[in-house]
Image 1: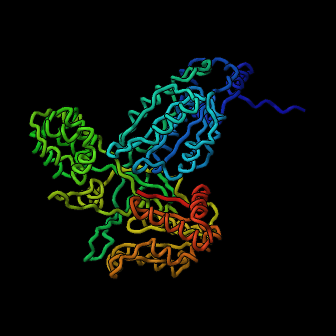
Image 2: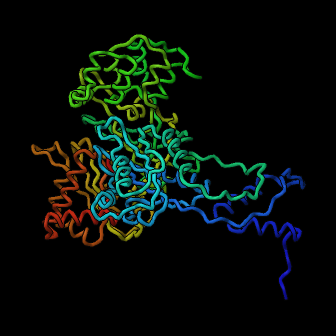
Image 3: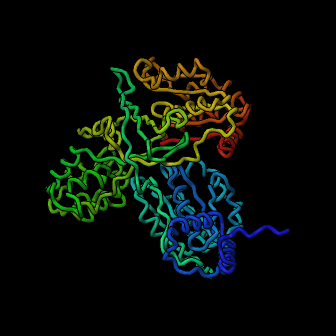
Length: 593
C-alpha cells in the first residue's frame, strides 16, 4: 500500500519544487527555506513572481583558496574569497598552509593566494614549513595552474609584503599563469583587497551561467551580525591595575559585557578594539598644521575625524615619502634618497608624525590634502584572557598601558592608553572577535600542555586554564610566567595559587628579571627544567608561547631546540627538525607580537 501524499501543493507545483531542490547544496537549501519563510504567505497574498523550473546544476569550476596567516587576517580574507567565489559559480576550497603540502598545488587548476608577512620579511609561523617546501628544489612544475596573489603587510617595515611577492614570483617561475596582478595591501587592507578580489575572480575563464530558478521579491530579515565591519559596543564592567604600587609597569585587567550580543569566542582568540586618538594628540596636530578644529571633512569636523578615523601618530619611511610628495621639502628629499635608507630608518625610529610635521613644516594644508597622507586608524588586537564557560556573557583582556619618552617627547600607545585614560567603567568600546585557529587547546582534554607567557603574554593562558578547569579536563597544565619583580608584577597571583591548590594548574615556574643581580627570563627557567620539559613533550604535551616576538619568542624557540638536543640526545640539525615537526603537528603554537 503506497503512502498518502501529504503535500499541500498541487501536483504540477510539487514537481516544480522538486526540480528546484535538485542539486542544491546545504547552504543554498537553507537560504531557500529562509527566503520562503521571509516573503510572507499570511493571508494567501505573497506578491511573489512565478517560479520557473530549475535546470540541471552545471559542474562547478574548482578554485583553491590558499592562505598563510599569523594573526588571522589572511584566514578571515580566505573565508571572504570562498563566499564570493561560491556566488560566482566556483567550487571553492580553503587550504591552510599550516595543514598542507606545497607539492599538492600540482593538482590545482585555479588558485587565489592570500598571505601575510611577519616581522622583517618572514612567513607566518604556521606557514614556515610550507614556504620552505614551496621555495625548494623539489617543487613540481605548475604549467596548468592559473593564479593571483594578495599579500598583506605593513609599509612601516622594509620588507613590505615580501611573502606575497615571493609566492607571486615563485608561482610564475614554476610555469603557472598569472591571470591578475598581485595586490600588496597595507594594514588598512579591506578596500584594496576587495578591488583585487573583484579583478581576480573576473579574470578566471567563465563557466556557463547557471540560470536562477527564483525571481526574488524579498528575503527573511537577517539578525544583526557583529564583526570587524560592524563592531559591537561593549560596556566596561571593570577596570583594575594588576601591578602593585612601586612597579615600573601599568597592566590593566579589563572586563567587558557581551550580554544580548549573541557573541561567543574560543580560548586562543583575540578581541579587536577600535581606539580613539587622545585629545592632546589631536590638538597638537591641529596646532602644528594650522588647521581649524571645526573645519568640515565630510559629515564630521576635522577634529572629530582626526580623533576617530585617522592614524595621527605612526611614522614610517613610506609615510615620510608620501608626506614629501605633497610638501616637497628639499632637506627631507635628501633624507629620502635611495642611498640614505639606513639614515632614514634611524631618523624615523622613535619618532611620530608630529615630529615630521615640526621638523619639515608646511602651513598650506587643506583638511582633504592633510588627511590624504594619513592611514586609517585601525583596531588593535588583544589576546583574550577568559573562558566564556566560566564568565558567561563576558570577555576579559590583559592590556599593558604603553608610555615612553623619546627625542624629548612623552609618547603613549594609541589603544592601550585610550583604554587606560579615556574610558571608564560604564562606558562602551567598539569591539569584534578575531578567531585564531592557529592557537588552540588540544582536542583531547587528557593532553598535557606547557604554557610560556611572560608579561601580558599570560592572557591566553588564563583563558586556557579557566577553560580546562570549567570542563574538568584531566590533562596536566604547566605555566612559565615572568616579569620584572615578584612583589609588584606577579599578574593574577591569587588566581594561579588557587588553581595550584585545586589541581587545575600542575606546575608554576616563575622568572622575575629584576629580583636578583643576574637577569633571569622564562627561557632560562625552561633550560633549568629541561629534563622535565622533555619528558612532558615525549608524553605528548603541547607547547604554547605568547608575548614578545622580537626577543623572547626567539629565545624560547632556541631553548626548545637546546632541550631536544641535550635531553633527547639529538644533533643540532635533528633537534631543529624535531621542533619543526612539533609545529607541523600543531603541538607547538605561538601567539607573538
